[in-house]
Length: 298
Image (cartoon, rainbow, N blue to C red):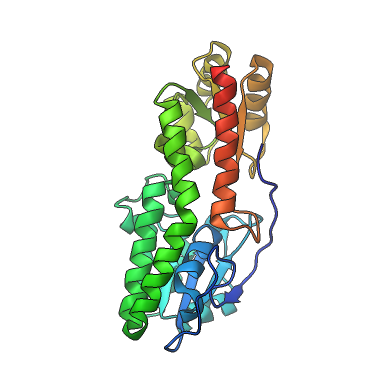
């Protein structure tokens, strides 16, 4: 039901590589040097920059927790040499925000949390929000325009090509939303997928106490876990969303309870598998939601 998890930590330097839309021709100016903190945004930025961007993504794949990452000297050097840095923000990649601040005021920064209008403590998994993805892409294109105005028409072409490549994703979100229409409930072992679940009309019935604990990265109180298990057993939760990049006794217990109750399980990952495009990654998970909803509807 989910894409396989793969990937290792890598510093990838590429001129628009890995994108869903191929770079269109030679760049009319010196490429903009761009550093992206995490792979959730790297593919998007590479698509938008094309051959007018020398894009480096610090963390690619799913094997490293961005919360705990310690940048290497070569990482810090990349920030210092960059023209533009793209970070997730909201405490998800604090090391990258600090490195960008240390690089000086000359550096242009796109902070996804700021673009999305979120504040510290909000759910940081913004790449699962279709509207946030679109807003961040617009912000990146605007900064590329400002840094290389003579390549403005090129960046406009890249943005148009990117939106065309993203259309199947937005179409699938819209179709799912029409099918679900607020008529299917879910519980989640972690809030990773919540923005997308909201976008497609799933109703979050994860017990609030459990949700607070999961958001803060701590084990739930026994009473909160009991409430979740009871919601699975009595049908209040109709499908379970599981982040397969994490494991432990609590998510395993919830998965076992869902399987015993005959609930469909939607497996998601926090980060895209290495070498996967953003669209491929997201469509694979939306397909899993579609099949789960079909099972709920019978």
